[in-house]
Image 1 (cartoon, rainbow, N blue to C red):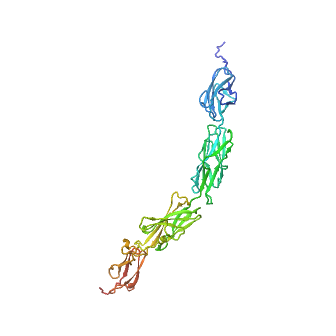
Image 2 (cartoon, helix red, strand yellow):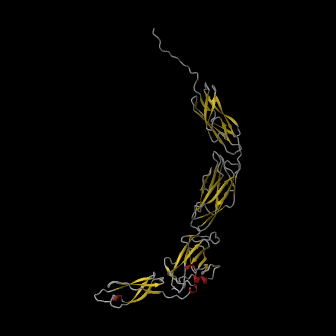
Image 3 (tube, rainbow, N blue to C red):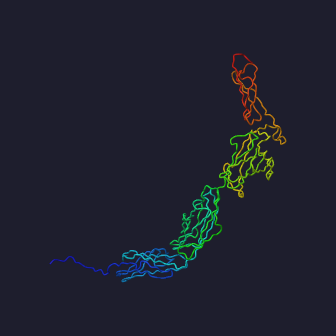
Length: 509
C-alpha cells in the first residue's frame, strides 16, 4: 500500500453573518427643553464580536452650541457590544432663551468593515424652539430727502428698520406707498447692498424680510431713489408711507408700522444753466455804440430768478456791478443801458467807493454808452462782463453758471491824442491831430526805386488815408509816378512809399 501525501481540514466560522445596521426611526421631533434623549440603531443579526459604529453629523443646529453628542462637529462614534441587537446614540439639546427658530440635527451612518448599512441610513431630529416670538415693529425714515433731476447719480434714500431680526420660519413683506410721484415714471427704486434675508420687488414696491435657516435677517433695508428725467418743468414732492398694521408669517400678532421724521422726498427740476455772449462777437464796434450782452438760459427758469454780474470798463476806470431779473420761462435776455429791470451800482471813476443802492438810470446810461474822450493808444478798448453766482442765495430762484460765463465787447477808439494823457487836468482836453512825418528817400542807381517812410504818431486805431504829392528836380522819376496820390497808413503807424526812376542815356546831376 502506498504512502498518503495530502489531507483536508475544514474550519468552521463561528462569527455568523455580518450585522446590518439601520436607524430605528428616520425622523423625530423634540422640544428645545427635552434635555437628553437617545437615537436608536438596530443591528441584525447580533454581532458575535464588539465593534465601533461610525456616523456623520449635519443639519442647521450647531454642535456644542445647540446640542452635544459624542465626537467632533462633523462625526461621532458609539461602541457596540457582542450580541447586541440595538445601540443608542445619546444626544443632549441645549436650551437657551434666544429666539432662534426651529433647527435640525441629522445623523448619517457611515459604512465600515465590521458591518453593513442598509434601511434607514440617516435620522433627522427636529428641535423646536420653545422661546416665544417677540413682537416686531418696522420704522420708516428718509435719510436723504432731496434729489435733482439732472443728477441721477446722487440718489435719495428710503430706510426701513425692524425692531429685531427675523429667524427661520418668519417672514414680513412691507409694501411702500407713494403719493405725488409714481415709481418708474418719476423715479426708480433699488435695494442698496445685500442685507441678509432682505429682497425688494420693484413691481410692487415691496421690501421682504425672510428669516434664514441659520441666524437672523438684517434689521435695516435701505432703498436708493433715483430721479427720472421727464418733459415737464415742475418740482415734485413725493410722500412715502407704510401701513400702520402689517401681517407677517410665523410672527406673533400684527406688525406695527411707524414713521420717524419727514416722509417726503423732493425731486427738483434742473436749475437753469446761464451763459453770456457779446452781441458783437468777432467784431469791434465804433465808440459810442451801446454796450450789449445776451444772457441765455437752458432750461428756462421755472420761477423769477435773480442774476448777478459785473462789467469791467476800459482801463478799469469803472466797475459796473448789478443784477437783472429773469422771469419764469425766459430763454434769453439782453443786458444794456435800456434793459428794463436792470439795476447797477458803479465803482469809480478812479474811486473805490461802491455806490449802492442802484444809481439813477441816466447816470449809468452814459457810462454804458461806451464812448470816451480819452485817446487810447492801442486803438481799441474792451468791455468785459462776468456772471456771478451767489452761493446759498435761493430766495429768488437758483441758477448754475455755464460756459461761457464771461464775454467781451471790443470798441474802436475815435478820440485823438491829448497833450498829456497822464495829466488828470487834461483828460477831457480837445484832441490834437496825429503827427505825420516822411523820412528822406533812400535810392541807388537810375532805374531803381527810391524808398520813403511815411509815419503817423500816434499810430492810428484804424487804417489812415494820407494825401501826398510827388515832384522832382531833373528828369529821374517815371512820369506816371509824379503828382498827387493817396497812401494808406496801417495801424502799425508807418508805411513805405516807393517811387520808380528812369534809366536813360542823358548825363544828369
